[in-house]
Image (cartoon, rainbow, N blue to C red):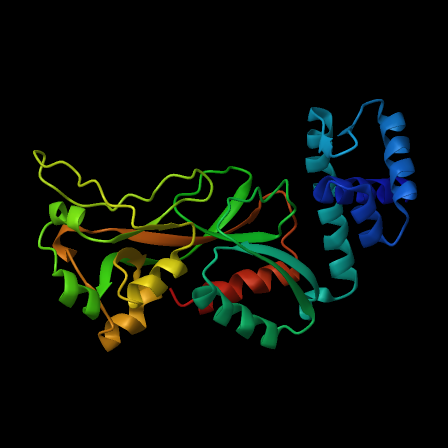
Length: 294
């Protein structure tokens, strides 16, 4: 059991990058954590962390050991779940990451919390591309194609993307009839957090036509801000239909240049293939799959 204790401390340090924080979460002193890591390194004959006064990072050997240790702890969690009949009553802490789309995500999370009151949610609501394995997430919700062989995925649904503007803006500035006319319009653009690149507006143009150079009137790394500004008559924005569904129905926003755009966005939930799918994770996957209103 001493080895299991050392493994647990090692995983906690690897995920928090801090002896102090790992000790706080485990209820022991940072000194005890440091001594445990040192004993583990002595026993293995390798260095697991690079240490400096400012940071703690995994060595190559530490990264390899971390993946194995997570599998061990996952199997232990599976055994404990079976013995405690947790399959009938999902409980415990669930760490997830979702896009910064509170209007889409929060209704599903709210319903999940009401139904599974013994599950504690630790949510990273951001658009950054987290490393699910390295950062210790149980599951993440993301868009786009998924190619990580370390992960299992389930498709949550798809929706179209449209170029929209408010009735007030279009009355003031006119309705563009062709993408080339956008050079004279205010454009509200989305910047991908991971790369810093602007999201392309995917116009379907003739081979002889060049893509318009869009004015960067406003740039944001979260699309909910762009939807808000579009409603305030500030310009055109390229947004998923779930974000503007109500505004389109009420007439507050209108679709423009629809004949030139045909694109969808797909949402996925992903979780580590090497990790035991605990009861709490299984019910979360099933709930989100059935209740995320995309």
